Length: 384
Image (cartoon, rainbow, N blue to C red):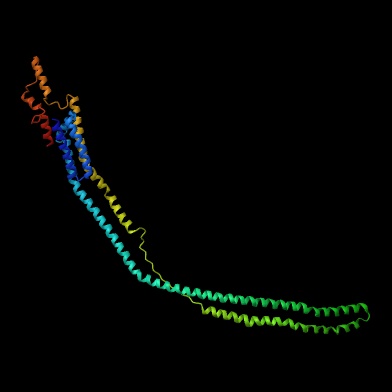
């Protein structure tokens, strides 16, 4: 009996493993773990536990009940739907990968074509930049040379400015120093005339003789000719040297003036805020999010077989509990204990139940009988 129970448990576990692996297409590791666990529980439980053995044996007829048939139909429906749906989802995933790959390939080729198109322009711009760089080097040398000339000219200008200031200061000193004797001479004649008028007021007209000698003071202005010489030299330097030097410097500077300008406009914008790989990854993520509910539903179908086995087992436990506790529940079986009790009553001379009448034999049956009771026949007839 124990060996038979162990073999039955292992057979049921192997049947479950084949169903999950071959029919439903579960992961190999999931099938291995669940099958080993179920085989251990069923094999050891049915072999060494009477309660477990009875419950498992009661679970097998529950497959043919109304709930069992519905579970079997749902399981068959799930197995029938799972294959095409998985194939459709797989095809959708491969199509999305192909589209993302094609889009990435198109963008790569577009970027390559643009790179090839802009290479000649970039080469021309590189040549222009090289020429401009060489011209800049030449311009830097010319700028340094011109700056040295300007420094020399500035030095000469400072020397001329010092000469200029010296000549101007010399003219002011000359005018201040040489202009004083003339004014002093005129002041002396004026003072002599005033003293004369105060001395002889009655003969004041004689004092005007002094006024006739006053033009002699103009002889002192002959010395002022020496003061005009610095002013003449100053104006000569301004007119002849400074103007000529400024014109010469301007002419030299204009000789070195040049301008190089290169104007190019090359604008290529693809409005690509993300890379090509990120775009393809976003496409795959979008497709995965759309297909995620279908994957969840298929996962429920894939785990339905385990739930069905658990449900049948719980129904067997419930049936056994009600059968042992409730005398009115499914009380149509003539068990061995009932036969022994009836024999004991016959030995005591009390009324017995057995043998059954024809009507009772159709209502009450043996647990191991090959036919159904009248109530079971009626129920199966209505269900059919």
